Amino acid sequence: MSLDHETIIYGMIDAGDLDGDTAHHALNREVIAMLPPSDENPPLTRGMFSITGSTEMYQSQIIHFAASIKALEQNWHIWLEKFETLLSKLYWFGAIVHLESELFEGDYQYQWVVTDEAVDQNLFNDPILPISQWEFSGGPRKFDV
Image (cartoon, rainbow, N blue to C red; front, side, top):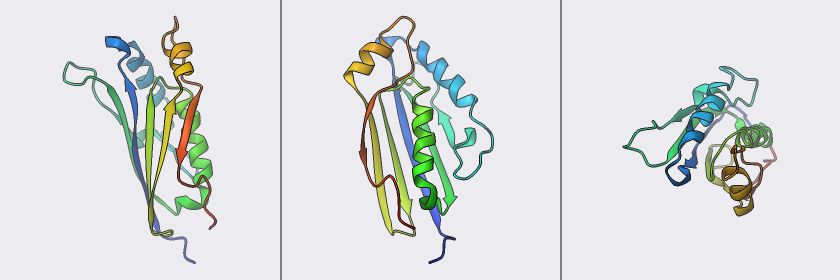
């Protein structure tokens, strides 16, 4: 089995807008800006992410990400851990990741949804706190390669 295949990941993190209060958007921008420009395999880097602007044109802050990574499936569980570490530093309501695998000839979807308890305890706190609790659903967290 060749591990020279391409794996594509893409998705978004929905940071919402806390009843018109967008102060948490600036905090999210700071967290994304602090991601490293390079990272060991599997990478989770600043260049993978883009954030919609904070203007009247956009209601919610959406943090987009995408990458093409060689043979990501062999370290998928590690990438998911890195992604969840990032989520634990952000202020958000939901996240979705799509993984397109050449090796396993399929598309997989992963979803994180913030619990109601975390919204109340973290986002409507003074000061607000990064999200620490969520519900996860989706494809396999580890591939047998």
